[in-house]
Image (cartoon, rainbow, N blue to C red):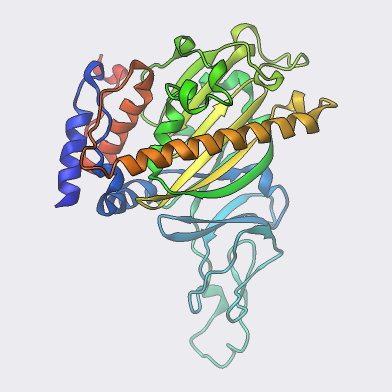
Length: 384
């Protein structure tokens, strides 16, 4: 009943015209049952970012991730290809690897069944007397894994369209940056006490910058400079062109790839469901979110510099400046988003009207409504 009521209220919000748009109803954030539906209809089916390919540079490099309750390991195999497998032993179902690292093979910590980097079972101690057992019958199930502009994505949905097909328009839009060549300098995992959609929406709009980020980037954020066009099926975005307060916010003098306004333009990109990117001429940072409950979200946080700034003699100082700033920005965002989630539990909580600067939230509402409640999204090209 809670899911049906939340879905009905969500559909009502999604059907409003943008000029009269309101935020999503509180129940779609606070309901455990609705979050379970999101796991089933969104995170078990869509592409989710798990990091940058540079983290898996060498054969045997791996990372682990839990996607929609399913343990997954992503690794660089012996042929240099990215592969993803179920991170569960085919013997007694122990999880195999934890965290990140490098392995020449995958050894189960329970009974030492050993798998190669190709997922095939290589060794199983004391199984010779089991007449029905044959090593070649055992191979870790594969999970779909793709690379896009230096990021790694995985999905549990076998028939899902490819990342490149989903994002080819975005790839064209941001091609001048050549983000695939940016260098990741830090990567961390955090858990915040808020709903994943609250944090995603916080990243999608810059309306909050002058207030929430008054001590950091807020004073340099001119809302009148923001461009918030309608989103597209797999992502939404907005732009700001400005003279950055930090040298790394604009193009490096040695950057000959960017011309004109591109040397001062920042792209703020939200790839559904939960990959959030700030891309500037000099640096990038990103979040990838996954709910662990309606009130908790695990966030992968990473960032780094463009090749020109990495080649600069002051690269180390630039990295330190960026990390310090983003840590402060994250702390401000954590305070704001946890306050929002707390307020959503109030009996007086109501979804208010959106500003034109919150256009991406309207698009996100329709995406969530499509995935969870059957809303039919219509885009300009389809309507003409």
